Length: 499
Image (cartoon, rainbow, N blue to C red; front, side, top):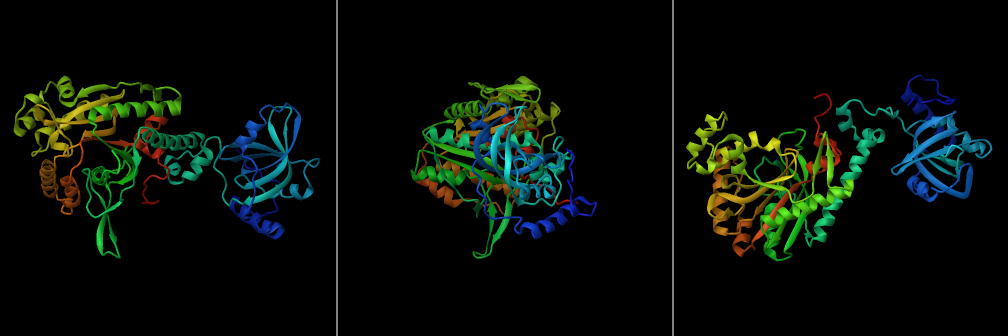
């Protein structure tokens, strides 16, 4: 897109300086270049819908007022396309229809400026819905040139750092974030229709827990105490379940983990976490399948979702595979036949896996699974029966005390959801949390503490329940064909420019 300078009075050859000079002239000529009030009567999309049947070379007889950003200008501003969030409309300014006062503004209008236009609706001989301008109002003078419209921002880092420019020039990005909004609304609607009550829990916590992750630390000046940004809402949501406020609770929340950044990880991310009294992990599997299927239908109108060169089928039921069974099938290692931590480490190392010297039986199983099975789980599948070693909040599998009733939902080789039949035995819960704390302190996490308030609530009695956490950002990646989590987060974490 080539920016035209139509009779601009500025003398400078620098684009930004020309715009600054035009701004100064506009202030002299019209006064307020950034007015606080402007009444638009119709959006561009509403206009297109209302006059869809207007015949060629015909005026409707209606006068409307629109507003938007100038994306193209032709014939010295006689023809302009302005875009609002809903779409574009063509503006026609001619001496036969447009007063001289309005046409005098045209040389001062640059691509990227935001203008308001009042005029008559017509359809041209070529079929273009158009407004014959009667009045033109400068609403915002843009002091920087627009990126090239048809190619957008070539540098991907600039796209993430200057998201406003990405969205101004990249229809794919704009659509993706519109779909993100629909997906989050769809999750909320699904949960509410299923009888869940939405609640809110603290983001600032004095004790972090509910997951194993490094927290962000801050300080409360008035209370004179250190606090942590939550890594998960789990322990507060379970207290809500204890309270009897509702048998079904959920929260769409922001979590914060002071860990790595990658195409699938951002330090702050969106989760949907829920707890369902008198349900178990089998019920939660069904809930996940229904939710994912409904969201696919919302975005694509089908349960068959394209991702890269693949088509992912979200039609339930999803395949269910046990973690020990999947590892045995892939590697030949039968972890269920292995009795001790030492034997598990030896078996893993014999098969070529470098496990830590103090890895437990369950940690070895999980590590081998991640290395050999996880990446092949392309179509939606539930991986069930995780080691108790790495699942401190889940109930044991009857007859196999080393495994728990836990599943993770995998799509495209990524974990999208994590769920348990929740442990509600307060004595067992305390023992597991003490063990988890001991391990954390051994790893150097000296600020990790036992959450006695949560354990007190458990002593009060929590009903048996199924719990679930869904990584909303990753789910949106899959549903919108996004290659990186940074493509679905409006303002992802970035280093300072120049670092």
